[in-house]
Image (cartoon, rainbow, N blue to C red; front, side, top):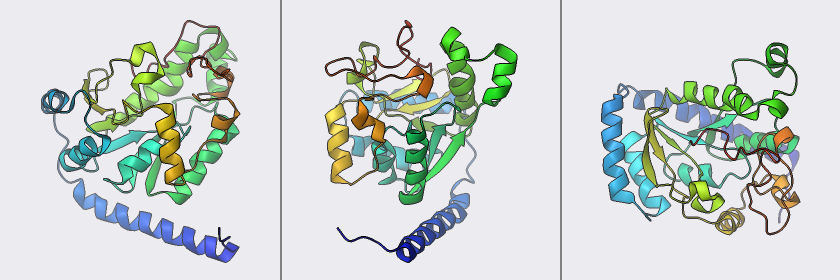
Length: 265
């Protein structure tokens, strides 16, 4: 493998940022159409759920998303891996990719986010809570996640995401049916009644191994914690390593009955 010089890397990054800026100038013209109403979007979701369920390919459903919604589309990415936004970007280059910046992430997750923004045709959008960690501590006490993880997730993930999704017509997630029993019946396309927009899960029938295979084939960035026993990565205080053979999500909120942060329920 050829190693790039510092000058070459800087030039490549400059071209990358210039392409991002060019896209955003052009995209402004693509967003002149008013957002459609909740009623219109729900009707689109209901029709699509019937058309694409249960096992349409990711490419088929994403080609439809690109045509139907264009850049009123956003992708949610936890930065465990970047397979989902990479797959979406084949149909919508520079697609808005939401990163929930909770203030509690592992350093490796922040590093993955930064490297992804610098190398892939994505537009990272940091979704911030209303309060900084110190402000939340002042109101609720320190380490709220130890006493009431549901409230902490609500304040630092669910509410910020809901506010941000109001600017889009469809959001794309990496939810997979094999992740937990609660996700076993997840549809490819559905109406998100909580956030009032269309929700698409194009990798719903992929396995964890499928993600790894795709990532290796395309030489994608992967959060180094994946190789360190963290198959499902959330906030650092609420995520532990998982032993071989354990449920991949068993390392999330260990010691609590909680199994979801509330984004998908």
